[in-house]
Image 1: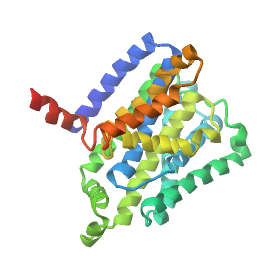
Image 2 (image 1 turned 135 degrees about the vertical axis):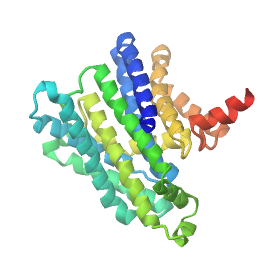
Image 3 (image 1 turned 180 degrees about the vertical axis):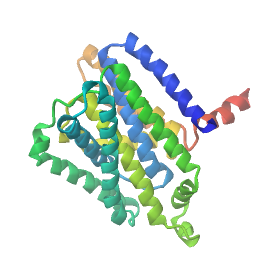
Image 4 (image 1 turned 90 degrees about the vertical axis):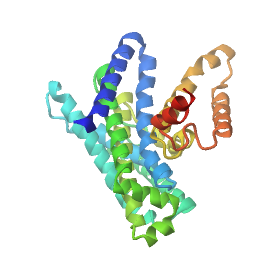
Length: 323
């Protein structure tokens, strides 16, 4: 029972927050909050590959697109359950999105993860572009017109709780994996791949496992994104989407789950907070201030906001020590 205590407390806290947001915020801010949850999933999943395993993937938008299009198609064509059981079908479709993205991650990762550094980044970037171009030519998925009329997950509160559950599952799954023998294998690959191989660790197998698990949660994030926006097209999953996920991981700290969440909140919310500035001045200064903020953070915190620390480590290292 003790192992379920922290996830349960996190879910209760998020449920209270969801109720407050549902009552006190307008629809625009609520949609931004849902996008924050999607980006938290993206950053945490990519952190497993880029942060903990030490690889460099630029194809996360491709896995997100696979999950988004699968859930969108399945929920509009294969949804045979009555309306009062929609939550079950949505849950099944989101899991299916993650599994399909994980299978694609296995197919891509098995040959490409034998590469290192820039070569791996180029291969994963190419995979993301292949997925986007393939979607442009699939008429049954809307092609360049996009896929519309995707059913939502209900009210804001139900969507918030649904996404929060997946965020908690992602966080504690990666948290537990990193404290297992597999997690130590991932870290050994990051620190010194040659030394890990000399100790008998199958480094390619470790990288593929991390890549598959990361792809699963990227597919889940894509499915949630599709149901939140009710419309998707291939331009929603460009190279810039993958770069955005990498920025979240680097900004928060390579190997820090807390940092990935904080960076996802910062990067998603800052452009929206600066939107009134454009209306006042008549000039779009949002991206200038956004880029300048990122540069200043990386100058002051070159290892990211949290480095490789978690929130509990920061509490013990700074707060308790100063007290």
